Length: 305
Image 1 (tube, rainbow, N blue to C red):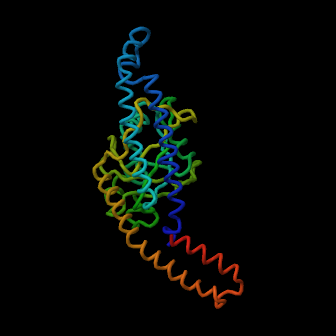
Image 2 (cartoon, rainbow, N blue to C red):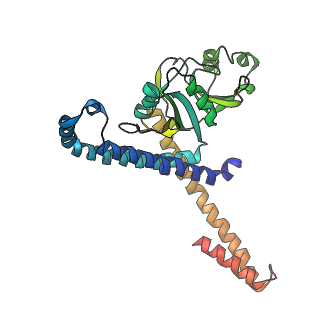
Image 3 (cartoon, rainbow, N blue to C red):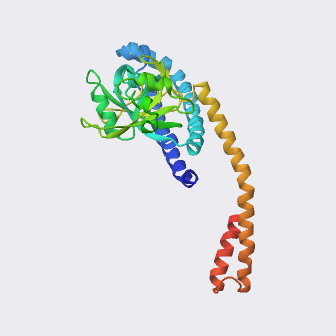
């Protein structure tokens, strides 16, 4: 019931992040790539050589911009429908900028690090300070925060695990993730002490420690560097390049269509029944005020149309 009642909230959130925010950043990066290209061999060029390559590559960049942003537009619409049906959260991931955050944004690849406190996988926080903490923990000065839309379903709180598996928390995370049975694909854990008082979430990636993985359930929408939104050279990768994710997304839209087909006749029948009942108001049976009765009747008649 709570899930149904919160559907409008999920819809508004999905439209804002998948369509308004993501499209704005994607188009902005695309236009910058047209007029101020910095990717590939153009990155180190200067002077007349740069100008020559800029002019010859201009038509290609225009075509690429139109093709890419058309796909991004369609993907935003598709993911809005998906996020409306499935609980999806806007979460924060702290890492280094060069080589990791850029890889996430440009190629859709996430690095599964050695920090396996509650499982081997990709870690997120619902608060920005969580990502800031782990970004500062990376070597070098190129700290970055990746803002992402994350579908955690189905997520297992660690305090609900069997006693044996709870003993893995903090030191044997790889074993924990290896023993986590279907349908659980993520873990939730309260991290306390040493200034860490927050929830952390892990998208489980068993046996992937030290590797780059494509995780369709985590979709980057912005990269922050120095607290500001950073340009992604070449633009963001398509977020639906994972075959398994595409199957689930297609199934979600099919399920949504079936639910609409099933419930729509019921809603019309209900509205019709209420309208018939309210028609009695005109004879003064149900309401004492004829004006109130007329207003409610007209309102439900409009709903039927």
